[in-house]
Amino acid sequence: MAYSAQPDSFVRDRLPAQQDMPLLMLDAPGLQFPDRINLVQELFDRALRGGFGAHLMLRSDRLSLSYAQASAQVNRLAQVLVQDCGLIPGNRVLLRGGNSIAMALAWLAVVKAGMVAVATMPMLRAKELGEVINKARPALALCDAALLQELQLARAQSPEPLAILRFNARAAAVTTSDADGAAVAEQADQVATLEALAAAKEAVFSACPTAATDIALLAFTSGTTGKPKAAAHTHRDLLAACETWPRHVLRATPHDIVMGSPPLAFTFGLGGLLVFPMWAKASVYYPDISYTPQAMAELMYSSGATICYTAPTFYRQMAPFMRALRAERGPPPLRICVSAGEGLADATRQLWKDASGIEMLDGIGATEMFHIFISSTPQEVRRGAIGKVVPGYVAKVVDDSGAELPRGTVGKLAVVGPTGCKYMEDPRQCVYVRAGWNYPGDAFFQDPDGYFFYQARTDDMIITSGYNVGAPEVEDALLSHPAVSECAVIGKADDQRGMLVKAFCVLRPGHVGDAAMVSSLQEHVKAAIAPYKYPREIGFLDRLPRTETGKLQRFKLKNA
Image (cartoon, rainbow, N blue to C red; front, side):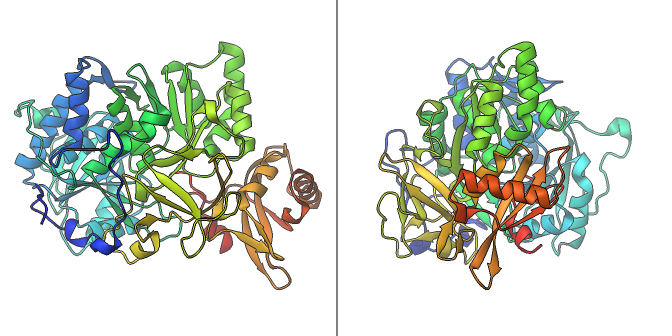
């Protein structure tokens, strides 16, 4: 058995059999790592050894921490986990909180101490949290006090005890509670803050000497199908991810200030809003308010942010506010706007570019792969395409047997690289990984120049009267209509055509979803793309069903 510094082998014992594991390509420059390496220690060492100890790492409206200060805080908190909580490497630690300095420090402390971070979306309810708890079997939960209620309900329904360590993200406070939920510090003035709990600890902590292949995190899928899975990622996986898309496409610098809406519990957010900025020795801004389109646009100016991560829907909603701010204040400090999490319609790309003056950086990734593997820099954008395969990865479009298809032919996307899918104890591993290749479940075609064009999720391809219709293409056409704010397209079973194209639209204020609007939208689509692709049915909604990360839940529309 390979070396491991994690005596609790719960996750390792539940990883796929070797024959079901993904192929890993680690021969490219920058992708060779020592057998023993700790992700968090390596990220901090990059900054501290490079003379960036005094450089700001974490920012909020109330607090800013340099790399040296953040490192010291992580060290103290790691000692609390080991000495006060009695955790050992390999134990799972559930993390529940929004994006904040306190949440970031907690995540880093867990991984530096050799435990497995299991971050959960802030909006999960007790039932969903219970599914995570029952699968991950955490030894401890770190929870923002504001989100404690649902976790306590989930714990009450769990067959195994779960200790909870509470923190207050706004005040960076932490208190402990026993398995019965009774507060250890009962008096309000005796509630220990994070700093008070760690006051007796030295600001030095020896990182767990984890193997490169030891598990750093379990990432639960966002559940667009309603059946979440736990994808395991190693310390090496995250370091390898840093050496691919961030190095070759994003190209952040220590001068960058990063902001964005994806939760740290989502790998898109964890990479973009913590791990990748640390790798670049940049800083991250976590606002004390919840993002709204208007607030986010305004904060882009007031925070001085130069890189933003969010989903296409949010960029579209921000566009009118950004246009007004740009007219009033001039260009924003932004230089890179990253879009991921769902397909980017070209209409949204052009709307944001017109409003902000910035060409969007698109990309497709997966929880199972950790982050983005197809993308292009703004200078290499091709309209309608997501981009080219990121250096370090190999991607191809294949048929059902895995044979590569000719360029221009729609098929299934298959990917290999330095990261890959490793579901914990899940039969769907054999669906995602076949012959070592990862199948994210997307339909694409590739043009002669190597650009990849997204068509649909493979289970969302609409076949109507013998024609293949990709939902994103129809959605893009609908979004170019001035009355449409958001839309989603699905295939609906039909006796005559097999399937027909059905659209759900959210209209802008002042527009009515009546028969005249249906006709207007249908004619608009017919004029924009091949007429057979137009939606034969159109419904109107106040909002589209989405996950907390902004992903569209098409299955809910199909069941409507």
